[in-house]
Amino acid sequence: MSDTRAAAVRPFELDGRVAIVTGGSSGLGAAVSRALAGLGARVAVVARRRDRLESLAGEIGGLALGGDLAEPDRIAEIVPEVADRLGPPEILINAAGNRFGTERAESEPLEDIRRTMDLNLVAPLLLAQQVFPYMRDRGRGSIVNISSISGRVGVPGIPQASYAASKAGLSGLTSELAVQWARHSIRVNTVAPGFFRSEITDSLYDSERGAEYLKRNIPLPTEGTAEDIVGAVVWLAGDSGRYVTGQTIVVDGGWTAR
Ligand SMILES: NC(=O)c1ccc[n+]([C@@H]2O[C@H](COP(=O)([O-])OP(=O)(O)OC[C@H]3O[C@@H](n4cnc5c(N)ncnc54)[C@H](OP(=O)(O)O)[C@@H]3O)[C@@H](O)[C@H]2O)c1
Image (cartoon, rainbow, N blue to C red; front, side, top):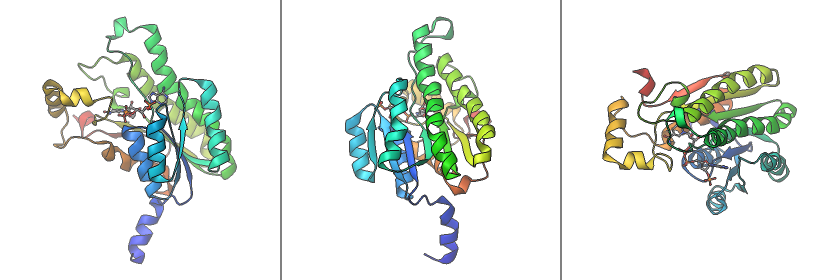
């Protein structure tokens, strides 16, 4: 590699840094885990489906940690376990998330609202609290939350009130933590994807009406993939993003630019 190329690539390298990625068993979390490992990080992947985590961890030389992020007691065990087995975490990617139910706002059940908040907003905050002392002691850290454009704009035809509220909440959490923890050089950012194909959105892409809806609303001509979101996450995770904090970066093929 030429010196010029090496200097350009260096800020993206993550050699030896310990990263925790939630939602590592599929979709964006799996794609981000592969990219972080490819850049040299030691990655712990967290989700409920252990078989998938084991297989990914084997592939990337990482650590598989099964757990339900709706359970605060399990969340409290995850970060100390990573610190013990891989070393103190310097990167946390909160990618696990879901949408429960398809009810319109006026009839969304309280139980679904609470489940959505617990997984999409409370778990990222609890994990951020857990990694804080390690990052403070190390004198640096990067937390990237994965939200959604639905935290910024209403999305016609797809009722998701509590999901949208939880994702907007991540942006508020992001700017607040960024300001509180900047003195320790801990950066906190959010990446807000538009639509990309994954287990959550497969049925939308597979239906003729859904595919047409996406095509009509996304200015860029190609279909979004998890890999299209990864670049922004990787940029924010390492030194390449070292002067960026408190931001929500939208990666949506132009959906919100219209
Ligand atoms: N796909 C899109 O178009 C889109 C758009 C905007 C935002 N997003 C956001 O992007 C993130 C990744 O989603 P994706 O599209 O990659 O979907 P995905 O393939 O369904 O991935 C979701 C991940 O979250 C994990 N998860 C769900 N519930 C969990 C729980 N209770 N405890 C632990 N892990 C749990 C799942 O693992 P297990 O099932 O194994 O637990 C899975 O690894 C989510 O936060 C989503 O809201 C996606």
